[in-house]
Amino acid sequence: MIKRKWSFIIILLVIHAIISFHAISQTTTIKTLTYSTLVMTPAKLLLKSKTLGIKVSIFKTDQKGELLYVEKLVGKTNQIGNMTLDVGTGYVVKGKFSTLEIGKGGLYIRLDIDPNGGEKYAFDISRDLVNAARGINSTFRFSVATKTIVRRFIGELFGGGIIFHLSQDSLGNQHGLITSLHDLSKNAKWGLMGVDYYGFKDAMNGRNTTNAMIKAGAEKGTASRLCHEYTNDGHKDWYLPSLRELQMIYEVRDIIDKALDGDKLEKTKGFERKHYWSSTGYSASTSWFFSFYNGGATNYGKNFLFNVRAIRSF
Image (cartoon, rainbow, N blue to C red):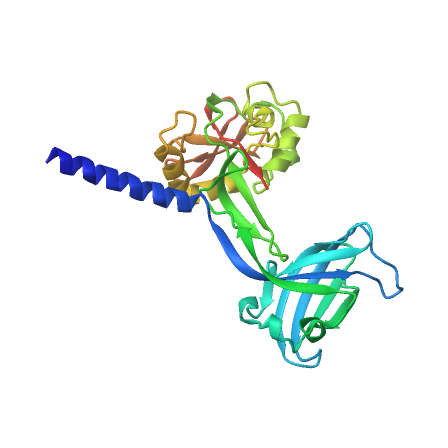
């Protein structure tokens, strides 16, 4: 009976290890079109060492044919004006890249280009992909390949902490917010008693309010100062979360707590069911805290002692 029990435990540990491995290695291998070309303006000037906003459109036969695929991404030229793109890795606007039969030819590609790196496309480079597919000499070249893409996820240990929020811009780049792996304090004051300033009252952006508190002279050991001075894994850009950012953490607290409490490490802790200071001020004598006990928020005296957790963005 004891032998069976240990066998069962070992099986569970193996399953847990497999699940954990997949949880920290979320990668995707995709087919891409590695496309290389010189970038020249309509005035025949090479754009050298520039970051460009690119919209890729692929048509059937020619530019008047059926529009099969559109994506947006960022391109960079080198010192001689050459740019290499991994088409298929950007933000998809239309179609599915994996269904395109690139190697067979009969396709037309257009690159709309914003020389300032955004989405205000000033000119385009248009070429017939069938020529390259047939091996005809050209000033551009392409190859079909696969590329491994890392996609971040909520609950992932990354950037000195753990991810609690993710977003994606119009070019397909992931951005997010990370909370520290433990509380910086369990009994810190908000500080700045008697100081009232409109810069403290942003309920959305904790970076702005934290910077305002630091400039106003936040005292040593107070909530914003603790976050401002915190460093981990080489990252020094931590700040005290706003009221909204604490709410965002609360909405995924089960994922965060499971990851941090489940690893059994003393230095990583989930959120306590207590009050946490936000960076959002209210008046000269009170500021907002967020309760991880019931998900509510209240403004309270700045000298009361509450928990503090730092966050940063990427």
